[in-house]
Length: 611
Image (spheres, one colour):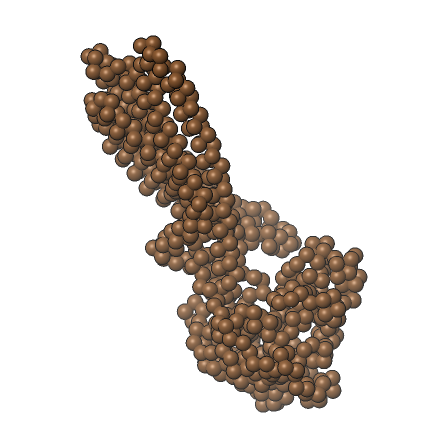
């Protein structure tokens, strides 16, 4: 899920989502599950301890019951004491099962929360174009349903390991009671093992298909919700509903297949188990009539045979592990996103914001979108980046402030490579405003003040809003700056002005405006440009420009064409000597370049240290 402020050119060229190869994805999923297990190691160990103790009590129960029955049949004086022991064993088993169930819920919840935090942290910590590889709906499914399913694996493994104890112990107990009854049971065991093996294989395939269809359907649903107004205006609601639900039959088929696999295995196991028990009963009856075993031992043998047949109960835990591992692979697709790492360097105090790009090349989808960009932008200057659609303007803006890294080359701010800056310094000194900003925070004032570092005070928020031309309409809102965003009826231009105010409120030595005035009328855009020059902290400005006035007022114009710098210079020079440059701007533009800068301030004074 990519922030809407993300690099548009990069997103467009990123292509469809490409998950890592299955072996790498499987290894990443298993590492994530191990991390989740370690996160709740104590509770997981407690689950295992409780389930093992409950299994031990279940194993002890037939022997104690059988011995107690023999004592009572012989009217032995110790019979009542053994009866109390039987009750204690049964009560212990029930209590331990209850404790295991409660601990399982805690482990599932903690593991799910950890997987979601890890996935979200990696999603927000990668470059926006990497995050955009996953559609919003798919990302939501990975972080919700699939993370919850994967979070059940640690406890399911503990339950599965403990579930093996009763069958194995029961077989051993059968051998001790009477080898012939044990041999009778073991003859049918290979068939049961084959059933479980087929179940695991078929379940893994079906679950993987089910989850893949689920992701695709979720993606289509979120797309439709985002474009609800367009769908309503176009009258295509029925068509969109059909598109969203197109794979629902496939989803239902895969869901039924999962249950058919599970039900078929359970049914075959259910048919096999009674046959084994009847065989054990028959052989045990023969041994009883021969005097080889007693009544209590026959009862114990039947109970142990039932426990040994409970190897089929491992199916449930095994199914949970299989489903969880398949879901973990979906969630792990987020964990494999490459992080946008940071260094520990700081910027020199009082730096003017000199930006330098050295041989910068950026590749998307196997093609170079920016090629061999080398440029020095003097500190304190305003640079307009112009070019036709798809020329690489937004990607240039993204690499200038390190929303993405170049594949080759370096970007330096006041002589320090952006890669080496700490995250705090980078986001404190480099600000962005976008053409379609997303407002974050509870109130309008919170949205303006949203950013890294200490929260600005009310006066700073209002000053930024005035500079962006937002103060008049904010004051008209029901509660002014305290108006809840959810209750603020805002137009596209008003949202854009609030985005500008947010950038102005946190302006550092470099400010990047990525088509951030596109929704403003000409008068308001001009007022914003004046405020940017006079009222906002002095620094370097990079303006992705579509308006002629933005290029006119810039100190330097960088003209991009097909990912390269075709020319750089003042607007007046480029306009005079480059006919193709004039064609970049909207058809019908007849304005002549202005050379006077009557509303531009004189060069800013030297900044104070630390600013």
